[in-house]
View 1 (cartoon, one colour):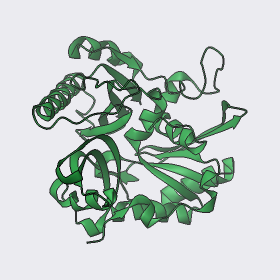
View 2 (spheres, rainbow, N blue to C red):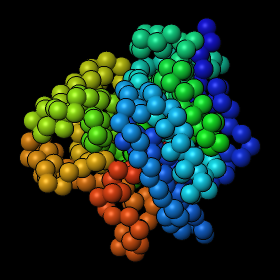
View 3 (cartoon, rainbow, N blue to C red):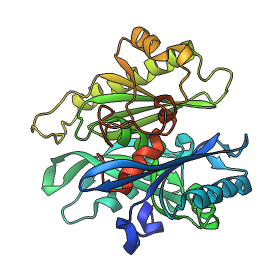
Length: 343
């Protein structure tokens, strides 16, 4: 059985250390961020946006490929883009947490590959996956029990984005799930708390739980534009996600205890979502932050997408704060592109 990880399909080239721009391809637009770093000081070098016609991306899959390619070519021409990191929509992604028993001397990636069929409805041979180790303990006979968070995509979805970039003469260095890219921009390095990211897109709202700086759960709320962003609907969905997360963590502790690595060596409670971070296409008239804080009973704030780039007390970027919320995935990817990331 031959499972493939991301870089098994497209191995990192020698120029992987080249600075890369961040690009998110959303249902409504392609957004681009380029950061520069000199002597440890990071600054916004360039940014851009190209609108896409309705129906260009449907349920995370490129449909109007000619229009997407034309938009990418225009961005490349106007901003001299060469190497990019790209965010993949959550619609086709599978994110799950599992314990993997790894016999002494065995390869962890192979062990993760063998549990794919148990957790996602995809054929292993047609799946591209990656994973992060979030905990570990030693079992019987020197077997290591690794607690992993696995991210997986259908291979044909990834190949469709690769083909679009190839036709646009843009070289892809890295793919991230969009929520993971957002986390890199709005969550501080080494943050061990559990945060809920609420990201607004034109036809959906993405709910993503990040704990110990690792994306651990993703849910896409109602793609029907008539109801997806309704406050009451969103409130109920957030409550479901928080309840599910808490129940999963309680169940985990009722079974085998897995030691989670922290900077202090102490195990931090993962039961409760400690804050809500809002990003994306946010309507200021709805005052969604105050609504969520009151209804969910958890502090909510608009994400500071620049906090891992520079201090807003010292630098004012040439983009409004409201607009920058839509660029959160691209900013996170651009941070990866200059070697600054917290995952």
